[in-house]
Image (tube, rainbow, N blue to C red; front, side, top):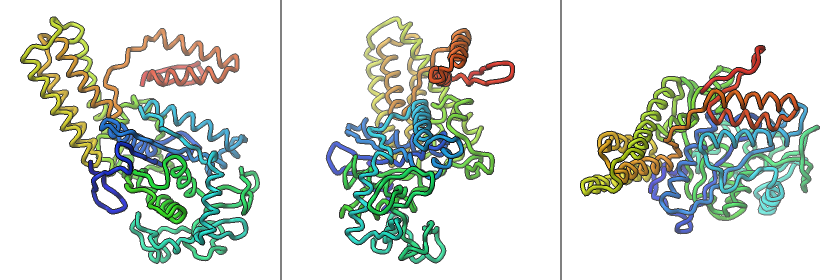
Length: 468
């Protein structure tokens, strides 16, 4: 199994630290709003990596955090007149719902930054003691130049950074020993959440959070650290510096990064009006189609999101679902139970599709080629399974499609059609719950309907609905 390691800029054979076990840390979202489709790409890609490693027999410890203290969360809390914790709790819940609908499995652990403050204070104290960090007026900075390997992940030169590369300057740069030093701890501002520390009442810098959570749940050295390529610098570079200076061992052996997602060939931006949340996409498409779209290209290739490409993914998805639906019909109506000798010979060909699939995934998680194996299998199903086939043969082909689909996180069996009367009944129950101020139940029903592919529209004439 080969992975492209950002650290060494080449594909390398994967050898875990502990045979049969894999530790993975994936940087999760900052929870101040609904997740957008840019957030969705690493969630889907690295969930698929996890599924494939488990398919290969590995025991995977998969950790993905929630950043639940941040300037954007605080800004949102001030705007809404609620606590930062309430903002974070709300959007963690919404994020988990979106993940479920994208068939992204919960991590082994979803740590939250605010629950790990003690560990952060401990790591910062160690860095100060070892001379890698210093305090000025309640702020603690990391001495970037003291870590001689700084830049080894992003392949950036410190002097180039200072003369014109991406700036690391933050508030209080006049206090720093070097403009490239970055913040580990900062004092609170009026109205902000804070924690007591030896240096000031304040909160941690962003980078230290992931270093501490990765160490706490996975150990000082982990197998795989993953995330979007926008995190390579400075976030992941700074994680390496902090962790390796504190722990004295390599932080992660393999660094995997997915490429950017563009919208109609332009960078996603609220100012350009091409910013889409996963929840908005779900109003128009089953999120299994979004997942299929995300996996239709290699994770290291830039991916362009457009209506046409989503429609293409929808057609491809329906093609596989129709094949499975047809197999279900043939299974239910088969005239014979057991395979014939000829069918047993054909059934042996199924292993070839798995081998084709595994070869693609072994080559740096090439999900595009893995899907090609699934489509070859679908062609096999459509041509080799008929009304004259045995139940056992049709079932074996169907099981093969579903098994490969499951590794990709895809569900290829059609959802049962929801009756209009059932939808209307749920809407009436939701209206009654809202009238009784039972907003929790009203939200549950809304989420249930969303999961059924039903979008609610509140209008002056009352609640209207439509199928996604």
